[in-house]
Amino acid sequence: MNIDFSPHLPLSPAALHILLALASDDRHGYGIMQEIARQSDGQYKLGPGTLYDNLQKLMELSFVQESSRRIAGDDPRRRYYKLTPTGRGLLSAEIKRLEGVVREAAAHLRPAARRT
Image 1 (cartoon, rainbow, N blue to C red):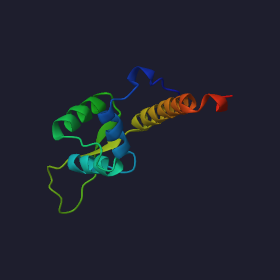
Image 2 (image 1 turned 180 degrees about the horizontal axis):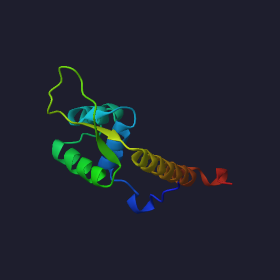
Image 3 (image 1 turned 90 degrees about the vertical axis):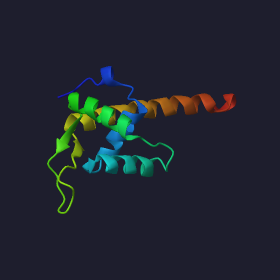
Image 4 (image 1 turned 30 degrees about the vertical axis):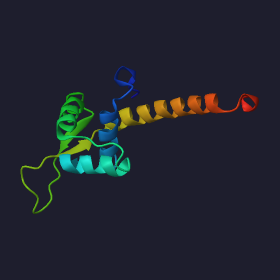
């Protein structure tokens, strides 16, 4: 099944970072914020309001869902989130789009003599 993700692209920086944070593991809200800070070397920090507003939108669009994951000794009120297969497809589409942007930018930044 081939899904057209173009109506959802480009992703906002917050949505992109949330999807990236969930690409490798299910995480709770604070864990998502920590992973975003780690992946961006502290350059991008997401506050709780922005995180949960974006998570809600991503869940409404079925790109993210609540996970059944629970860790022994963890606060039972803590909710974990995971990337859905459709969310993974959206993230892949955005990565492909960004790769094209970077290729185009690199081509424009090359000296004129080397642009052939």
